Image (cartoon, rainbow, N blue to C red):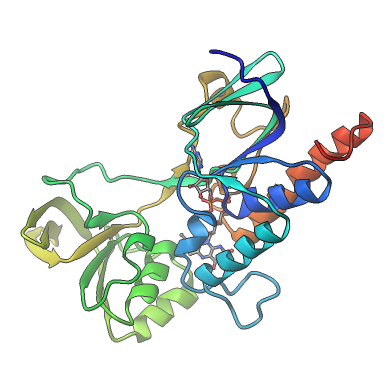
Length: 298
Ligand SMILES: Cc1cc2nc3c(=O)[nH]c(=O)nc-3n(C[C@H](O)[C@H](O)[C@H](O)COP(=O)(O)OP(=O)(O)OC[C@H]3O[C@@H](n4cnc5c(N)ncnc54)[C@H](O)[C@@H]3O)c2cc1C
């Protein structure tokens, strides 16, 4: 691995709420971070239909609008984001080597990579773009039949997001709904949302534009047709790019490495927690630089 000429002070992997908050806090202290984002600024928050628990927005705000405010905040502090996926992170002696479109080096790294969707054990006969793992890619579709697999917060949030213009069917493999009671109640009130429990997906195929899900329900097999299927069956930390030795340390901070936000939060995945985590890691870094007498314009 060749050594990149310039060693950056701090690299941040992921520009969701956690990475954005860390970047703003660092920039305010004169430390310009190198920020990587593989897809879109705002991360998972782009999928949130209606955020009602982020302080400062008493009437709620859509995930999309909150991300627009975060973007504005980044622009205000002239923070640029590299639209690159980090494929490997390795530490050698006191330097982190970050492999993206090219290789970068940094003294400290904040991992704000969030979570990746869990994939089902069965796979599809024809894999295609009509089976998705977030609502974002299809949030503008109209007059479609959409099957959502899962019964947690995300499944209900997706259903409420899409039901104004589409027909929604939520399939739960058990009987327990893990979504917030408030969301379940709203879904019950919505005309276009139906719910079936004790359903197992056996197979998904595509015929022309239609998806066909073969399901078992009460010991019988049925076919359900859909224009789109969204899997919302849980998420796991997005840490595939970490070297084996860094992975062993996950989720503990240490040695100039910090984990912030959803990537380390287990079931406690919320925007305000991610933002707090990002600010906290940035402050710890700033304290170290100050202690060592290094403050401005790194
Ligand atoms: C449907 C839904 C509704 C929600 N509603 C609410 C709500 O009402 N209130 C609330 O507080 N929270 C809500 N959330 C949760 C909130 O979106 C998350 O807690 C928050 O986005 C976590 O921020 P994060 O920065 O830790 O991770 P993420 O938002 O997941 O951001 C991580 C970023 O890292 C990027 N990344 C990952 N790996 C790499 C890599 N190798 N290279 C480069 N970039 C990478 C990803 O592309 C992503 O943009 C909701 C989530 C969903 C899905």
